[in-house]
Image (cartoon, rainbow over all chains, first blue to last red; front, side, top):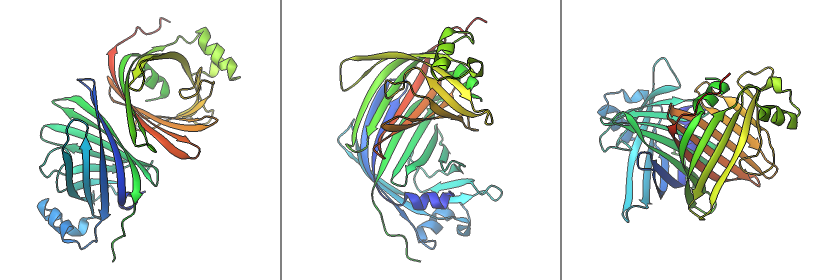
Length: 178
Length: 178
C-alpha cells in the first residue's frame, strides 16, 4: 500500500475511541470522536494553498484529504472539534517517505510539516517535531473497516504520553468526481 | 534486535497501564498491573518441562523467561495475578520467526503456542490462534525503559477488542548467573 492508497482507504466516516496514558502521572483518560476523512480533488484550491504556505510546488502533492473531527474527552464537558487538510509530498529519492503537510498540527495550533514513512507492512508512521514536543504516530488497518492508531509524545526529552485510537468505519463518503 | 535480545531488554519490573476498547459496545476499560519479567537460565527445569509439553527438543529453545503479573481492572475489585513461562523456538529456515511456547495462554487458560515475528524495526509481533479467538499483539520499545504493546482480538470472525499497554520500567532484576 502506498500513501495515496492509505488515504483512500481512510476515506469515510469513523467512530473513534481514544485513550491517553499519562506516563508520569500514571493516569488514563478516554474520549470519543466522530471523524470524517474526505479525499480532495487534485485541483482543490486547499491543496495549492497549503503547498504555497510550505513553499512547495503543488504539482508534487501526491493527493490531499480533509480531516474533520468532533469529540469529547472525559476530563471536560466541552466539545472538541476542528478540521485540517493533509497533503503528502514524497521525497525525490524515496517513494515511500516524505513530508506530510498539515494546515494545523495535531498537538499545537501552528502549521508544521511531519515526516511520513509507509512501511512494507502497510503501516503509516508519522513523525512530527514540534517546537516543544516530539510525536510519533503509527496508523494501520486491522481490516478495511478498523483503523488503529498509536502515538507517543515526548516533551522536554522524556516520553510523557502514549495513546491508542480505535477507529471503526461508520460510513463512506463519495470519492471525488474527476 | 533478535528475540533473545528483546527478552533481555524486557527483563525487569514494569508498571503497566492497560486500556481495552470494546469495539462493538463502544466501551473502554482500564487497569494497572505490576509485571516482572525474569530471564531463566538455559538449564532451568521450567524450559525443559515446557518443551516436553509441546514435544520440542529443549536444545532448540532460544531462551526462556518467567512473566508474573499482579493487577486490577476498573470493572471489578479483584486482584488479577498469575505467571507464565515463555520460550521462543525459531523456525529452522527463518531465524526471525518461530513458535512462542507459553505455559498458559494470555486469553484462555489452556496451553497454546503462538507465532512470533521479529521485525526489522525492532517490534515483536505475536499471533495466537485460540480455539475460539485470534489475537495479534505488537510489542516495541519506545526507549529502553518504555515498552508499548497493542493487541487486537478477533472472536467469531470479527474484531472485538483493541488494547494498549504502556509499560514503564520500575526496576531491574539480576541477570541469571551462568
